[in-house]
Amino acid sequence: MSGRFAPSPSGPLHAGSLLAALGSWLDARARAERWQLRIEDIDPQREVPGAARDIAQCLTAHGLHWDGEISFQSQRRERYNSALQRLQTHLFCCECSRRSLRGIHYPGTCHNRRDFTAEGAWRLRVEDRVIHFVDARRGALSQNVAQEVGDFIVRRRDAWPAYQLAVVVDDAEQGITSVVRGRDLLDNTARQCYLQDLLGYPRPRVLHLPLAEHADGSKLSKHTGAPAVDQHTPVENLRRAWQQLQGSPAPQLALQPLLAWCVEHWRVEAIGLK
Ligand code: GLU
Image 1 (tube, rainbow, N blue to C red):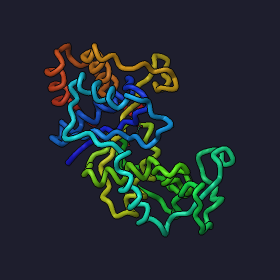
Image 2 (cartoon, rainbow, N blue to C red):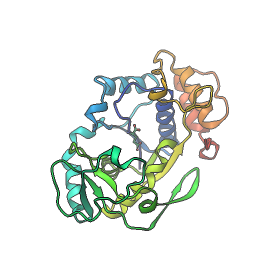
Image 3 (cartoon, rainbow, N blue to C red):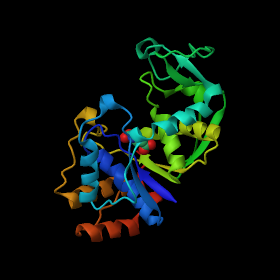
Image 4 (cartoon, helix red, strand yellow):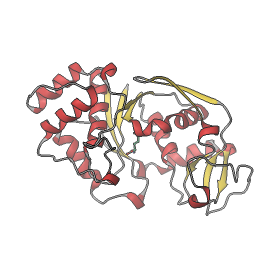
């Protein structure tokens, strides 16, 4: 049984990503499970040199130790290609530009295309049916992927696998049984369940955490100028993250006793729904 933290190396950890790291670490440790660190470096355009190392250092400074070696998605491309091969009969090639499509729902422009070209992205032909899944905090949820998202991309036009495909292959092959991450990824879960079903993978338990916020209630992210976590104040950072995750204060303790206290007092039912 294992959880994981799967950051993209697009910058150092900010308060929001630390919240996700702490939540998934606590959930794994409270369940006496392994916790793996996977760097999702499949988007060279967005990658910041040194970010992967910074992230690992920052986790260590906060006492959030992972089990085993760090894995890097950029080193696992042949795994994604073999999954794509298995999906072949469900794929089609689409050269539509993001601009021409606008919006999140794909209108099915190239749905019936049979030929593949070097320029196109590969999309999955999605059946019109409802995907049901359970979030450990939010309960039963569902989404009709065909109607709400449409045929989605599994291989990008730059020939790298799309996030949806890579995450599903890795979660299955790395034995991930709990996916604990920020609520901003909740929308992706039905697509991932769809792929898991199609590839014959087990579906991991999923748990989505509240997002860190600025004082004005707006989401904290790199786009809204979230600063890097200060690695010299791990106790303060963790206590703030705990408060946001569990809605109650953590005691003033040194790093290791604080983490032990948090593992002991972690309650999924207390996680905020925001
Ligand atoms: N790499 C993704 C991110 O940084 C997270 C993937 C996941 O947890 O499923 O937002």
